[in-house]
Amino acid sequence: MSRTPLFAGNWKMHKNVKETLEFLEDFLPLAKDIPSEIEIAIFPPFTSLYAAFEKLKGSGIKLGAQNMHWEDKGAFTGEISPPMLKEIPCDYVIIGHSERRQYFAETDDTVNKKVKSAVKYGIVPIICVGESLEQREKGETLSVVLSQVEKAIWEVQIEDGGKLIFAYEPIWAIGTGKVALPSDAQEVIGAIRGKLSQIYGSISQDVRILYGGSVKPDNIKDLMAQPDIDGALVGGASLEAKAFYQIATYNRG
Ligand code: 13P
Picture 1 (tube, rainbow, N blue to C red):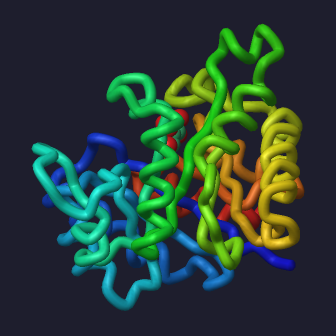
Picture 2 (cartoon, protein in one colour):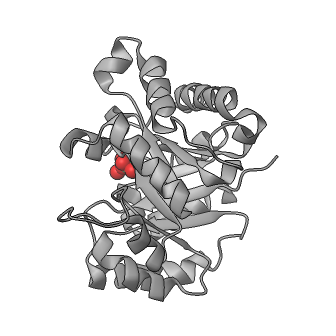
């Protein structure tokens, strides 16, 4: 068993087309030096996806979107469909980020619909789960997170573990500079893998599970030393070419 480490840059609502191209001008020369056993993906806003795709050609860097609707078309003003993402083409889509759950009424049910749709269209979903500070303090972390996991993949059939990715992002760690202790992140991510193995059996060993929340060049190494952490979903630090490169090359000492 081996899971390719993935460093995914979630740009959130940052970088227009011009800024996206400027980032890649800086990042692509650095990225040539990242070994092929490490996978890199960026998640720009929808409006920058096609420009990013053109610029990334031949680089081996993957591309993803930050959200999508579950239907393939229809009267859903302001939404983007899975076939639209396939056309770009996007390899990945982030589903159920806590900011979408918090500000845009995303629920476990809509997350499940989107995950089913992503799998159907062959776009690998990065499914985000994580507890609030209040839930952690009440000792509810594992019950909250495992319930989110179970509901996200309800009736989702996969033939191999590469079809799904999870990201454990404790809400209190996002954008706060308060990274989770590596041992705490491992405890939750190990429990997620345990839940996946109940549902999917041995192929759960091939499902990648990322950590997200205040990942920086100086804390990634200890996180990656944990047996079940397969990479990171990086917010703020992925907006800067050098910091994102340093995260992806964490094992250079
Ligand atoms: P930060 O790395 O800025 O804390 O954001 C994490 C995140 O939400 C990635 O999806």
